[in-house]
Figure 1 (cartoon, rainbow, N blue to C red):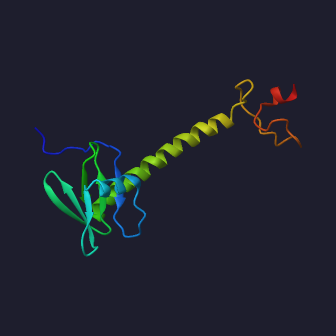
Figure 2 (tube, one colour; figure 1 turned 30 degrees about the vertical axis):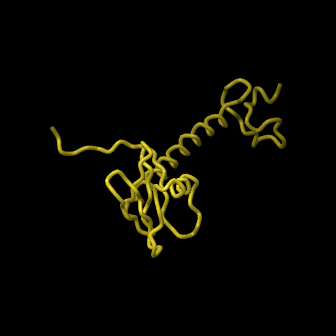
Length: 135
């Protein structure tokens, strides 16, 4: 048995607790359903959990887990979730860019290497190969 584990990468919903009135819909639903309440002094929220009532401060993260459970997370720890999503988004964008670039370097007519037409004044289609653009 090992004492070290790696947390599975899962996507969760999170909200950085603030007083700006810009809560997402799922947070408003949690307020309406009595799952969370504002602290009387406005310094954070109370989260009603199976373990009891927990407090999360302004600037902390409210996280909805994979089974719909709500819990608070200190701001310095919660930012790891945001960073992980940003890294995931960047990786996805890089993959899409590579696919798009590959599409742009292939002639849509025959699939051969595209010629961007820089050697002609007005190419019929800048991404067709020279063979297809001549016909």
